[in-house]
Length: 105
Image (cartoon, rainbow, N blue to C red; front, side):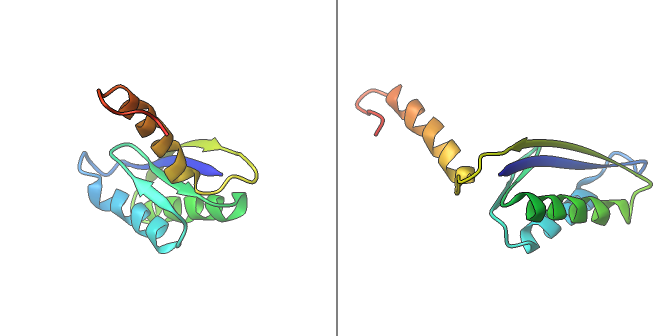
């Protein structure tokens, strides 16, 4: 499964990058495939392991903030692996087809 989530510390002012970095450190230390962008961190794995990472990342932020907001979106597809990369590659192939002299594979 893929889980895209964001953890936002509340009640700590406008500068939250340091606390969000705590959550990302937990995700990266998990060893699960992951990718972080400006809005979400996406993690790939089995239900229990991914949800444990989301909880640990949330707990890391909650240890330093009086309130935490979590937004989560999940794509559950049993038997699918490497979706974190494959989904993006599929879109890129289609975009490449739009450029002159290229065709999707």
